[in-house]
Image (cartoon, rainbow, N blue to C red):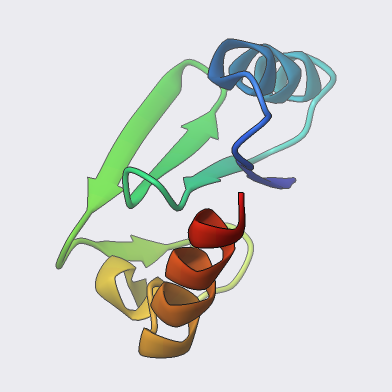
Length: 88
């Protein structure tokens, strides 16, 4: 499961939701926080925090797939986030 935190989401509630899914045998939960530019990967009994040049891999679901965390925050995303923040 993947959750992307919005400005109105509670980080604690999202973490609890992911932990709940993990307890129901979901293999992986991913929490993306655009404001802090952090990705948290949850597995049963484990939480890994990724940022900057860290590489997200999911070998148990997508063998060989990789994503550099910095690549998530593309210039288009940054422009949208900045524009959206100005409107609110």
